[in-house]
Image 1 (cartoon, helix red, strand yellow):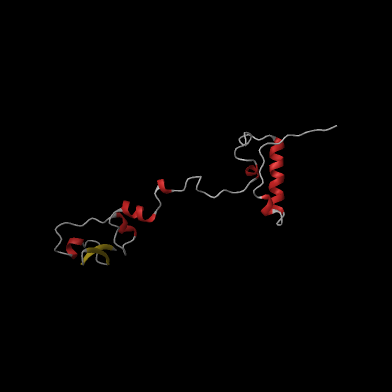
Image 2 (cartoon, rainbow, N blue to C red):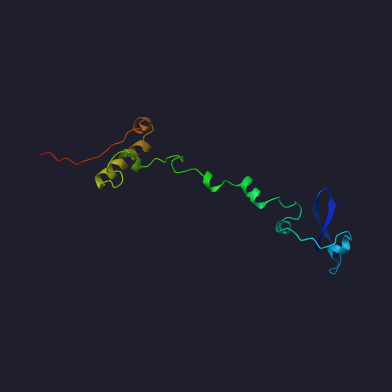
Length: 133
């Protein structure tokens, strides 16, 4: 099977020909002085003409790299780490006690529907264990 061209309007539309293997495009259309070269996309989808510009196709159908959302624009997922206040000096490296308290507050918030609204804004800056005698 060969792919040839017919003149329809301004675009060259590919069409299938079932001639012998020795038939060339020039023999099918004697008006052509040279054998036309196929755009690589026409090999993949011979029904549709190729896009005018592959770069234009990418611009119209995909998000450019510089327009992806930054981490500050993405929604924040709740976690136990978010129970420690952002201005806390121990937020970067919380102690084991602070991690346990943050996890307990987060578990209490997620497991009790009636306290969820009240506990959501609750955060702490630091925690210390105090022993009394």
